[in-house]
Length: 136
Image 1 (cartoon, one colour):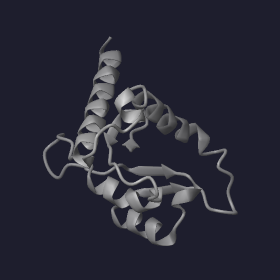
Image 2: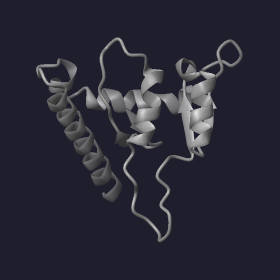
Image 3: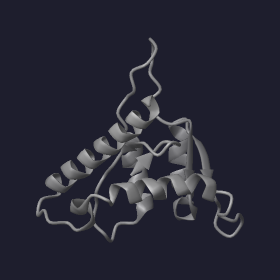
Image 4: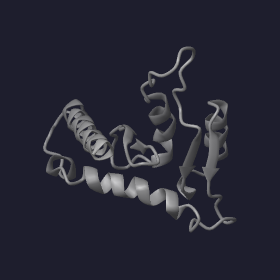
Protein backbone atom coordinates (compact mmCIF):
# COMPACT_ATOMS: atom_id res chain seq x y z
CA UNK A 1 0.00 0.00 0.00
CA UNK A 2 1.13 3.51 -0.78
CA UNK A 3 -0.29 6.46 1.17
CA UNK A 4 0.26 10.19 1.38
CA UNK A 5 1.53 12.13 4.37
CA UNK A 6 -1.97 12.36 5.90
CA UNK A 7 -2.60 8.61 5.81
CA UNK A 8 -4.90 8.63 2.78
CA UNK A 9 -4.25 5.51 0.68
CA UNK A 10 -3.17 6.30 -2.87
CA UNK A 11 -3.01 2.76 -4.19
CA UNK A 12 -3.11 -0.80 -2.93
CA UNK A 13 -1.87 -4.05 -4.49
CA UNK A 14 -2.08 -7.60 -3.24
CA UNK A 15 0.49 -10.34 -3.76
CA UNK A 16 1.62 -13.66 -2.37
CA UNK A 17 2.78 -13.68 1.24
CA UNK A 18 6.30 -14.75 0.27
CA UNK A 19 6.92 -11.79 -2.07
CA UNK A 20 9.40 -9.21 -0.80
CA UNK A 21 7.97 -5.70 -0.43
CA UNK A 22 10.68 -4.11 -2.56
CA UNK A 23 9.53 -6.07 -5.62
CA UNK A 24 6.14 -4.34 -5.51
CA UNK A 25 7.31 -0.74 -5.14
CA UNK A 26 7.61 0.05 -8.85
CA UNK A 27 4.23 -1.56 -9.74
CA UNK A 28 2.71 0.44 -6.86
CA UNK A 29 4.13 3.69 -8.20
CA UNK A 30 2.91 2.86 -11.70
CA UNK A 31 -0.61 2.12 -10.45
CA UNK A 32 -1.22 5.57 -8.93
CA UNK A 33 -4.17 7.20 -10.68
CA UNK A 34 -3.56 10.66 -12.16
CA UNK A 35 -4.94 13.52 -10.10
CA UNK A 36 -6.98 16.13 -11.90
CA UNK A 37 -5.64 19.57 -11.22
CA UNK A 38 -4.51 22.61 -13.13
CA UNK A 39 -4.23 22.62 -16.90
CA UNK A 40 -1.23 21.04 -18.46
CA UNK A 41 0.53 17.88 -17.54
CA UNK A 42 -0.76 16.66 -14.17
CA UNK A 43 1.67 15.54 -11.48
CA UNK A 44 0.93 11.86 -11.17
CA UNK A 45 3.66 10.66 -8.85
CA UNK A 46 4.67 11.90 -5.40
CA UNK A 47 7.50 14.41 -4.96
CA UNK A 48 9.28 12.38 -2.27
CA UNK A 49 9.22 8.74 -1.27
CA UNK A 50 10.06 7.69 2.30
CA UNK A 51 10.88 4.03 2.83
CA UNK A 52 12.75 1.85 5.30
CA UNK A 53 15.93 -0.19 4.84
CA UNK A 54 14.16 -3.06 3.08
CA UNK A 55 13.91 -0.85 -0.01
CA UNK A 56 17.61 0.09 -0.04
CA UNK A 57 18.51 -1.49 -3.38
CA UNK A 58 20.58 0.49 -5.92
CA UNK A 59 18.41 -0.58 -8.88
CA UNK A 60 15.28 0.45 -6.99
CA UNK A 61 16.76 3.82 -6.07
CA UNK A 62 17.65 4.44 -9.72
CA UNK A 63 14.18 3.44 -10.92
CA UNK A 64 12.58 5.84 -8.43
CA UNK A 65 14.90 8.68 -9.45
CA UNK A 66 14.12 8.02 -13.13
CA UNK A 67 10.48 8.75 -12.33
CA UNK A 68 11.43 12.18 -10.94
CA UNK A 69 10.89 11.28 -7.28
CA UNK A 70 13.28 12.29 -4.48
CA UNK A 71 14.45 9.19 -2.65
CA UNK A 72 14.36 9.19 1.16
CA UNK A 73 15.40 5.64 2.03
CA UNK A 74 17.56 4.88 5.04
CA UNK A 75 20.74 3.12 3.99
CA UNK A 76 21.66 -0.26 5.40
CA UNK A 77 24.51 -0.12 7.89
CA UNK A 78 24.91 3.66 7.63
CA UNK A 79 21.79 5.42 8.86
CA UNK A 80 19.47 4.72 11.73
CA UNK A 81 15.81 4.29 10.91
CA UNK A 82 14.88 6.40 13.96
CA UNK A 83 14.65 9.54 11.81
CA UNK A 84 12.32 7.78 9.42
CA UNK A 85 9.91 6.89 12.24
CA UNK A 86 8.09 10.21 12.05
CA UNK A 87 7.09 9.36 8.48
CA UNK A 88 6.71 5.61 8.80
CA UNK A 89 4.14 5.67 11.60
CA UNK A 90 1.62 7.15 9.17
CA UNK A 91 1.87 4.11 6.89
CA UNK A 92 1.68 1.73 9.86
CA UNK A 93 -1.41 3.55 11.19
CA UNK A 94 -3.03 3.44 7.75
CA UNK A 95 -2.44 -0.32 7.58
CA UNK A 96 -4.01 -0.72 11.02
CA UNK A 97 -7.04 1.32 9.93
CA UNK A 98 -7.42 -0.98 6.93
CA UNK A 99 -7.07 -4.09 9.07
CA UNK A 100 -10.14 -3.08 11.05
CA UNK A 101 -12.00 -4.66 8.15
CA UNK A 102 -12.36 -8.30 9.08
CA UNK A 103 -12.40 -9.44 5.49
CA UNK A 104 -8.86 -8.14 4.96
CA UNK A 105 -7.40 -9.77 8.06
CA UNK A 106 -8.37 -13.29 7.08
CA UNK A 107 -8.64 -14.09 3.42
CA UNK A 108 -11.92 -15.87 2.72
CA UNK A 109 -11.85 -15.38 -1.05
CA UNK A 110 -10.39 -17.87 -3.47
CA UNK A 111 -9.85 -15.39 -6.27
CA UNK A 112 -7.30 -12.63 -5.97
CA UNK A 113 -9.61 -10.27 -7.88
CA UNK A 114 -12.23 -10.50 -5.15
CA UNK A 115 -9.70 -9.82 -2.41
CA UNK A 116 -8.29 -6.87 -4.40
CA UNK A 117 -11.82 -5.48 -4.78
CA UNK A 118 -12.39 -5.60 -1.02
CA UNK A 119 -8.99 -4.00 -0.39
CA UNK A 120 -9.89 -1.20 -2.82
CA UNK A 121 -13.27 -0.78 -1.14
CA UNK A 122 -11.61 -0.53 2.28
CA UNK A 123 -9.21 2.10 0.90
CA UNK A 124 -12.14 4.04 -0.55
CA UNK A 125 -13.96 3.96 2.81
CA UNK A 126 -10.83 5.11 4.61
CA UNK A 127 -10.41 7.97 2.12
CA UNK A 128 -14.08 8.93 2.58
CA UNK A 129 -13.66 9.03 6.37
CA UNK A 130 -10.54 11.18 6.05
CA UNK A 131 -12.40 13.60 3.76
CA UNK A 132 -15.30 13.81 6.23
CA UNK A 133 -12.85 14.68 9.01
CA UNK A 134 -11.23 17.35 6.86
CA UNK A 135 -14.52 19.06 6.02
CA UNK A 136 -15.84 19.13 9.60
